[in-house]
Image (tube, rainbow, N blue to C red; front, side, top):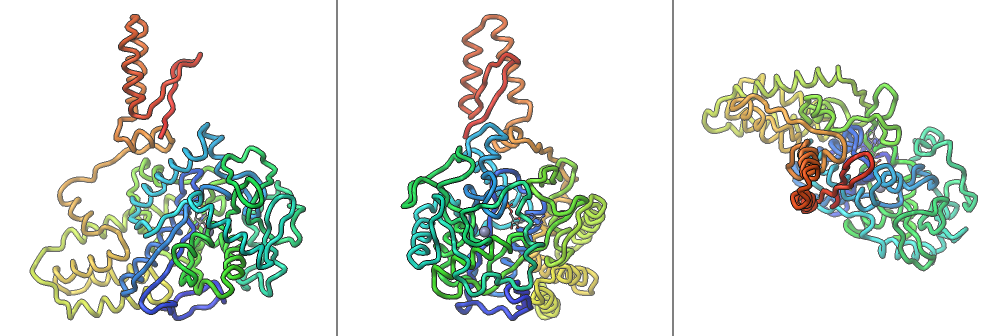
Length: 485
Ligand code: AMP
Ligand code: ZN
């Protein structure tokens, strides 16, 4: 397989460190809000890469972190912790927010047929590993203490800007103008490995460390979690292109300083999903989620199809018009698959030519749109229906468009439209399989019971809700509710 490697900026033959085995690491979501469909573009393309490597016969180990601490509102280590900001926004604790949005992320991923990685590790579970790594970096002379924090000293490296084809100014995407420079840093690009001092004193989660009570920097999380599970030699590290600098650059700096040798061979970066305002981003707000697409009546897999139609190294412009075109094409594709008959055995010999073309497309730097074209070629061909069905299943093990499943559903029933609600309370009810107005009805019944002085019944209703994690609060403006985990 030929892959474009951001490290070096060229297409290269993919050769894993250990024959037949691929160790892959993915930067996981920062779970302070729903993932938007831009984040999910990245995860869809990484999913195709993983599935294709498996299809090509590799034994793949894929590791992903969950960023539940340490990612500040500026990627350059200043600003408020994103998790804390999320908790404040929703009047919940940081752990509640992390738990809720982690579940929401995997629920969205499942709807998009994104496979769960083999290892999923929340950063808050790895504090001893982070501390060990930071201590080793200090011992080796790569890190220093200043103003209570531990910093990585980038001046100790011969080549800090490993992704040489990148322009530092353009890449300062995470650095917001309203957050000041950190004067503790010896060099502009030094970054925090461990914080004990933050401008924001109310940081929710802190742990004991040799440098005082504090919390890890964002970059150290990915290095330590990757090394913990995937070992000292990583084959592919994935992420959205905004992570290349400073996040991935810093990961390389600290991992290689810690290990004393080259760490990761291939860097796979997915370009951004853009909307009218530019890069879709959580912090800007107004972003699109899978639930919102569903609420508007879109099948999430139509969005997956939309992503597969363009190359991962090109920015992708989202508009509902573009998505509508894709929905039409997707539905037509399903209709064509639905017309195929189950007519005997597939002709494996004849199928091979198409499998080779499919592989050729994906072997060429994961050209998914060409792979989809091969799928159309199969449908247009004069192969038997059984052979076509065989090939569709084969290709769908990588593309994951559920073509056969959808076509069978189409034959059985008209599509059922689900209603999803984007706010967290509704998502909670949905998770529990409860109707959206369930709590409102119970609150109304309780109010009636109270009005007729039936206190036992009022208490019974409150207790019944409590058992389901729904807590009622009587306020001067009436009864409101919160959920607990
Ligand atoms: P976050 O949850 O912010 O840590 O981001 C999760 C993943 O989504 C990272 O790999 C980001 O690089 C990626 N990402 C963020 N915004 C976009 C976007 N607009 N398009 C594609 N990928 C994105
Ligand atoms: Zn990362």
